[in-house]
Amino acid sequence: MLAYTPTPVQELHDPLFEQSGVRVLIKREDLNHPYASGNKWWKLKYNLEEALLQKQKTLLTFGGAYSNHIYATAAAAKELGFQSIGIIRGEETLPLNATLHFAAECGMKLHYITRDSYRHKHEEQFINELYNQFGDFYRIPEGGTDELAVRGVEEFAQSLGDDFDYLCCAVGTGGTLAGLINGLPDRIQIFGFPVLKGVDYLADEIRKYVYPDKNNWRLVTGYHFGGYAKTTNELLSFIKQVEQLHALPLDFVYTAKVVYGVYQMVRNGDFRMNSKILILHTGGLQGRGA
Ligand SMILES: *Cc1c(COP(=O)(O)O)cnc(C)c1O
Image (cartoon, helix red, strand yellow):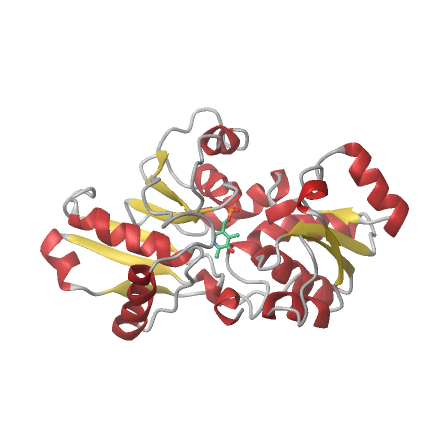
């Protein structure tokens, strides 16, 4: 399996938190692997095991040009000796950005398709064409979210124990949040912070993966900062401030949005007095170099 480094929990000390009677900690899962890091490690775990079990030689997956999932899959494939193919949305632009450059260096074959064809990526006919073109492969869906990914995150969630009252996490496809919901005890409140705008579909998508009796979670939709990979000067200066004050690196696509959201929610009094809030650092720091 992929190498794994145990990760620390870091407490964020801030007068605001003291005055508000809460403790805020962050699980530094960004440090679990140098390349296939954060939530992507856990999402890949059982898909990689399954591909090994099936004696597959090639992993194929999908993503945008800045995708953390593409980056992590390329690194994982290299480490475990798989060939890899990345189906990339949009046209090739040269020189490659840092994400795709890294993926190519790992040996990933990059195959570009139009935004239009990309919409058909889940359809049988489209997938059959990929088999015709590339031969046999093990397919991992876009963003890496499927039942096996959710199971990996569930296992991670169980390793967190229950010495906290809230768990806060950035949400893209929702696969990670679903695993957290499944793996954490019911008394812990789980807040997912979508980084995309217009996510009416998302709660239903998450429910597809979540055990039916679970309702200790909700989506906090006010902190997307304009949408996926969108940012503002305020968010960028927040990142700088947090890095200086807490030696905590954040990326603007995912993790900065949830940490910013937690600060605001503390200011709004949205957490109980004397409670302990655990933020999950899901990684994504590779995106800062792109
Ligand atoms: C992919 C990613 C997420 C979102 O995970 P989903 O399972 O798609 O919701 C969150 N944070 C980081 C850093 C990511 O790379």
